Amino acid sequence: MNQQPSRIQVVDSHTAGEPTRCVLAGLPDLGRGPLTERLAKLRREHDGLRRAILCEPRGSDVLVGAYVLEPENPANAAAVIFFNNAGYLGMCGHGSIGVAVTLAHLGRIGLGLHSVETPVGTVQIELQSANRVSIRNVVSYRDRTAVTVDVPGHGPVTGDIAWGGNWFFLVPAQGRQLTLENEEKLTAFTWAIRQALDAAGISGADGGEIDHIELYGAPHDAANSGRNFLLCPGGAYDRSPCGTGTSAKLACLAADGHLQPGQTWRQEGILGTVFEGSYERAEDKRITPTITGEAYITAETTLIFDPADPFRMGIGG
Image (cartoon, rainbow, N blue to C red; front, side, top):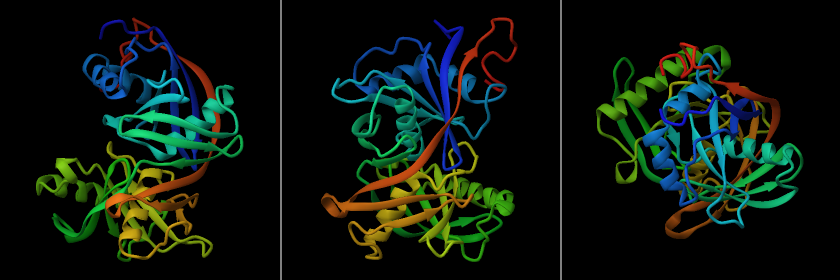
């Protein structure tokens, strides 16, 4: 890696239990052009930073990172590139809520509406309080319904393919208990589904990789609408109800006529935390979802990259 920094400033937060690490200073120069070009440069020239920042010994596989950059359009509050232990994310709902709360914590934004650039489009954030944020996500839609894949050790599994800023395969829990105590079995099952989809060549539109698997079932709290368990691309499960996953769920509900525009869906995650979701109609039977949740700052710190450290670039990096 060229121009590797010796120190990187970060602010950590969690959104409904799922952590976000905002990277604020110390990054290599990525330029000021379109975010897709900056992401390409980051992936091509500085990808080693991804594991160094997030993974052991400085972090863990569950962490999601957010490079907070200068926006291409100065009218926007920031540009953000989301990343995890496996690669880069088009959009991240819980991460966007974490970014908004972090920007507010730093005094960069106040209450009200703001726009943030992501690699898959500009999203609107509404800071409602120091901790509560609504995200008006990118246009979402169900691509295909009732897709069946043969999963070794489990047999045929049927689900829907939907886009919510990332590609999802949504599968009914079918009696599986969506509880934290059952996490290992749920992780193994959803990982097997992901591998089976890949082996069968099943993808989203234009060959998009389906890298998120979502199981859904009844809520544990009658005040809520549903509960999910969600496997993220790197094999960790989402501690939150997942913002882009909730967007994909809303797209499926809308396509089936089970949720009307403006109606609220309360999505439980595996910890019992809740995102509220609703949508507006968009073109071609697509929707524009809005996801609301809460995030809290957990740390302000400086990551140190000692040249003598054998794990300077992360374990396995």
